[in-house]
Image 1: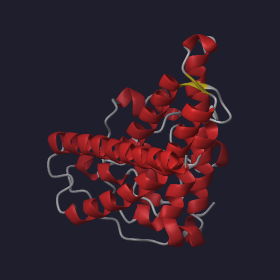
Image 2: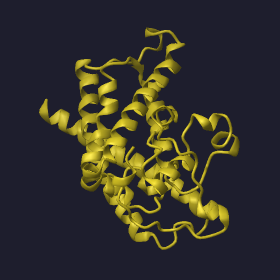
Image 3: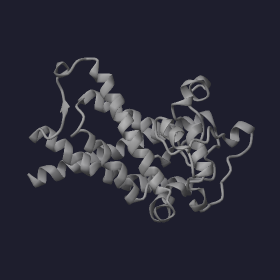
Length: 258
């Protein structure tokens, strides 16, 4: 049994790593086509981002692999495969519940990571990408990767979800994580700057976090930032003004804690 669990964890680690390489590589290619030269001179940074991200893939993959083995062989989780087991209306509801729970977890752990001590220990690895690229979505210190790795595996024990709906949640998580870091806005203006953008997080919102540090902590939705007074609106990109992307100076986050 131990060998089967270990092999499942290794397989899931490989899947997470390949998913990262495919998603970040695809959006990095899109960046090269859409904004040639945006990542010029950042080869060393991107190699560092890829290295940290592949290490994070192992940390994400191991618990996911253990849970996947338990689901398939012991029925540990509340993942189901029969679409008729729950009403059809519950499929989108379950996706929303997972996104809401994940967003809440991310907001508070992310904000905690900006406490001076934990920023120095762990989160500084992520903010060392100045500005981040499409490769930075999983560029985490192992401590931070662990806080992100446990949330979905925990939720599958608590909230019923169809396996396809879980796949959609993981896809949304991957796409949002990458596109929020790639240095330009993939979504049209009516999404990021219209009424919808008042509640959804896109690259411009997260760009402000990387510019100012002590704000805009959310992952999918802006309401935790709004509720807690940490929403500082949308950032901008240097290429919007026709200039090169600035490499912002490193700064202490201590003075920016709410």
